[in-house]
Length: 360
Ligand SMILES: *Cc1c(COP(=O)(O)O)cnc(C)c1O
Image (tube, rainbow, N blue to C red; front, side, top):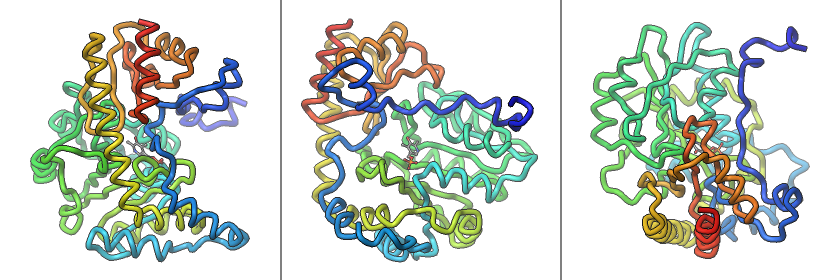
């Protein structure tokens, strides 16, 4: 077997996804299990999305619209851009793959942080492309360290802003300064999966960069928009970059139900506002309880919190699991004594705190 598999694939440590609820119930014989592990929307999908899916169920014998006409139109209008500025993907995970396939030559590299979304590295390696990493500074992307890692072979720089799993962000000024020295032949990808939860004033308004610079912004329907299970995300960039990426994708990469659900969710302002409110209130509740219990954590602008549990995070993950709470241990990210907890509903947050108290 070993000789059959390409070396780059054989050397990859697979992505470990958040543990599913049903699997946990089955394995541990539990009736009630909550999942605070994958930064999903705790309120479910938008009722408007569910309605749109039901209405379109009898159309799934047809291929989806290969050009995502209605969704691109709606999205581009909301950013005051053109449909030619938008690329749709089967989740932003697929867009990472399309970016690497479109822009990174065989002998070129990508740069990202050493503690960030794992998919940049995994997807680059699946494509047999080199990955260069720069350390974080105080849990935050260190753009100076990234700048120093740039070499003649660097093609794409991936920045998760806010960063997952730390919840930190880089500011408007930092992005501007970084771009002002960035060579024209290097692409900057700003992955803004959590931008919809931002409650600070100095977060970059990155759309302003795409006209003039080689910047690609990635966004997703998996988090605040509540459609993680349907797999849909998108990229925003100037038309020259988008049309190149369009060539590297599969024609029917975004399924029919995902397209109609995304359009319907964009219309559901009430649902989005409610989600934001639940998450911001939940964050304050968790901060307060964690402080009182003496846990250190990294202040977050996203819908999750990185918590220093002061002992082996995998053991804490397992102890919480037995009490019906799924969080994420941070072993794969190299953060041994940490867990990452997604902010849930009021009830879920309470259950998490109660379980954490019992095992501490
Ligand atoms: C969750 C997440 C995504 C979303 O991925 P999808 O493939 O769209 O579900 C992208 N980037 C980061 C940093 C994330 O945490």
